[in-house]
Figure 1 (cartoon, helix red, strand yellow):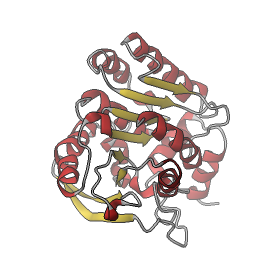
Figure 2 (cartoon, rainbow, N blue to C red):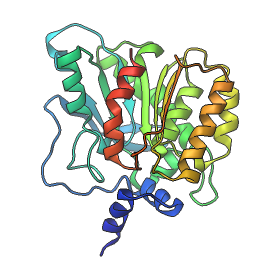
Figure 3 (tube, rainbow, N blue to C red):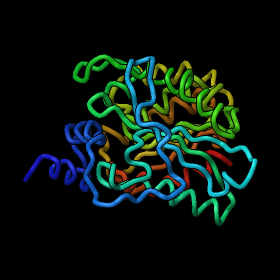
Figure 4 (cartoon, one colour):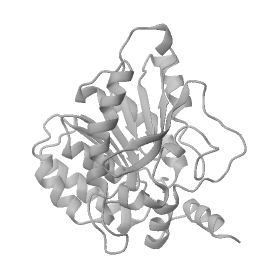
Length: 288
């Protein structure tokens, strides 16, 4: 029985803290599905997009609305982490989020459309790139520089090359696990850029600094909306209690029901299938 199978098996049941950290690290390792499942309106923006803040390059995906080439409309933009897992089972760790299928359906039925920019994770760098703070085991956090990349490099490029709605009320940052942590940080650090945040199963266990950061920054982010949730089966101590504690911090900082949505789905586990099932609800609440 190989280690990849053990990691996948651990996501199907409630995770221990050790397995949860292993899972967060291994999201970058493809499970090698045989065929691409990406919709035709998903493209690769670049395979080697420069991240000058970290002196690295990265593959960037772009999802365009079904009517993009036939209209002159401008669209909201979602900046999403773990690009490998968003659109295509072939590049995913253990199944995809089906972002393209979900948004195509919402576009066709509810006329709700947007642009999605998917940023591949940094493979072995994932744990540090998505960490705004240092960790005694995982090392020096690079999340501050990574967030600056999204704000100072990627978003200006996207706004220049695509028909976007540029304001914070039309710009969301979304991620899960460690990607949820960096999405949370990015929105609170730059609420004038990201006015919406989808925080899926965030790894608040990573640093106590996250709570002090939220206490301070939450008071300043007057118009920010956050969709915050964790599955009840992700681990009471490791995931559920930190999420509930963070929700309390945000409420004390002034987030009311209009600006903060929290949920604890009873069957939610720490995996892509769970996050995929919650995406439509998060998107429609955040961008309404």
